[in-house]
Amino acid sequence: MDWPNVPATAGADVISIAELTQKLFEDAKAIGISSNEIEEATGSVYEAIRNAILHRDAVVAD
Image 1 (cartoon, rainbow, N blue to C red):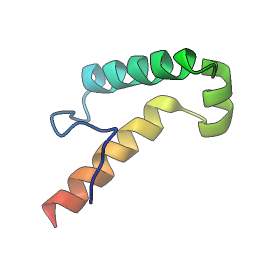
Image 2 (image 1 turned 180 degrees about the horizontal axis):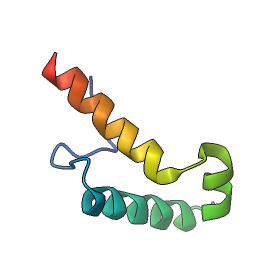
Image 3 (image 1 turned 45 degrees about the vertical axis):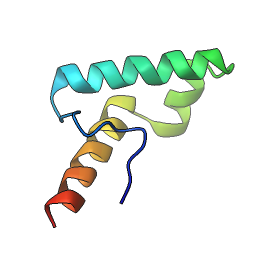
Image 4 (image 1 turned 45 degrees about the horizontal axis):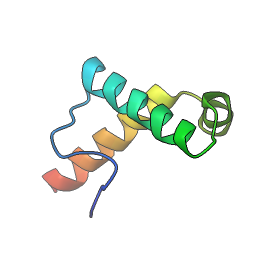
């Protein structure tokens, strides 16, 4: 499975997740989506990104 928005080098560590979160908010802002809108839709952005990385890693391991 391809995870285009989760780089293969991204780990489930705090720094990687923080960098991805910042990138997400920057990209969203560029197209007019506020961080509040994202957080309302996803709950914890940190957890959503962490779960995507962990899911990707589990799929790759299989």
